[in-house]
Length: 171
Image (tube, rainbow, N blue to C red; front, side, top):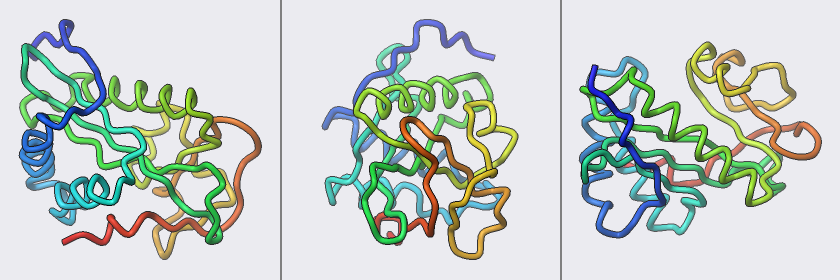
């Protein structure tokens, strides 16, 4: 496993955009539940100014990871909740802590911005490490409830149907 200790996490810069797309596309190749549209989703969210938090992990001058957070609606209302994803890590560095560091930094940034909560669609054991839980009153389509998780960042838990930004319909 490569040493990532000199890695820095910082906000996305315009020079990073092509690298983020390439990274995101390569990170999801062969992933079982991937639509293979994650790179297009990130681009669509950025184009719509809906990437509220967009962070990159950089190691020795190269972008090796990216995470985005965008607003979600609950029962059609913006109540200060966000969706996590996509999160991408260079294939050779997956499982080494890059994604975890990006997610933690992103959640910290959301909290500092006054976000009320965050939702994620993904692996329960992985996202549970960050405090996400499927023990909530939020719903997302026909997704099995254990894979749709939430984390309260401030205030009360939310209740209702979640709608992601239209950028998630990309590609």
